[in-house]
Image (tube, rainbow, N blue to C red):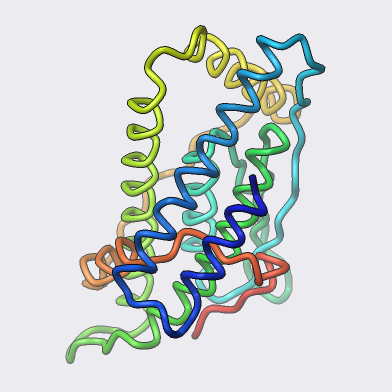
Length: 235
């Protein structure tokens, strides 16, 4: 299934592909990634196969815009039925942030694939958007990136609704997905029994709407990006 997704996205990246064709191709890729996780869960539950285990990945993020990158990874992870825990500390060189991902194997693979792509697209998009006069560049770009991530979350929610509507008669789907969700929660609780919710941030930049528009146009995947944590964003 991931190979099908890669082929769809490779077509979407072809310079000869129009924006409308690229959006249609990547929307289909997002639906397949979401449906792949659901189908894997149902197959393991109904056919007596050995169920996948909950795995985890540690993704180290690199500056600039560490918190915004963490937000984007959280959005992608949550959208693909995974959970993420943000780990941060200060060093002599400044703030360091890593994200600990938890989820079933197929879902984590989808998270890594899409997050890598979206980092590249966000970097390209935020550079092409002119910062309005009077705006502080870093603040505007921070709010742009949050808007980008929020739009991506909205698109994934829509894709999930379409997937569920397309398979209304799947027996036990809700129970299977609930069981998988509980298994992921248990793995997180065992690793982080004293986990706390982060305080909400207050952003001052005015780039949210522009970033949101870019997020709605974004290709939801890019197989040619090998390592998500190494992709830079402009300063």
